[in-house]
Length: 86
Image (cartoon, rainbow, N blue to C red; front, side, top):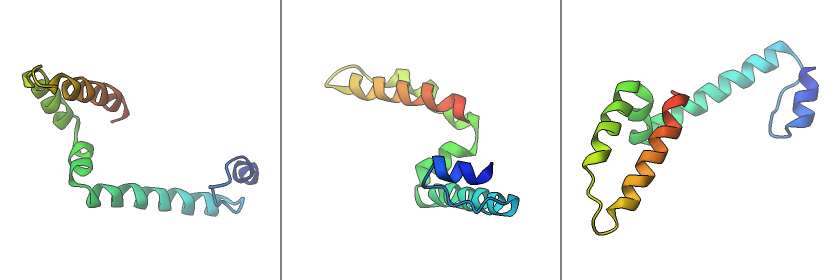
């Protein structure tokens, strides 16, 4: 069954054993954590839901003039999409 996952998803390098699956998961976790250390904003957002709540509270303070409404809308969208993922 694990071998069929590799066939269905060519990017997954699993040798069909539970140890191979565990190694794949460990590698994915390391890559995920490395991205947070490279990008400080990403790392800050991953720390807690409180950070997202702070950003959500600050978004209404962005003015609508001079095209800032586009930024405001984008931030609102990103925060709504991102908050369930955390």
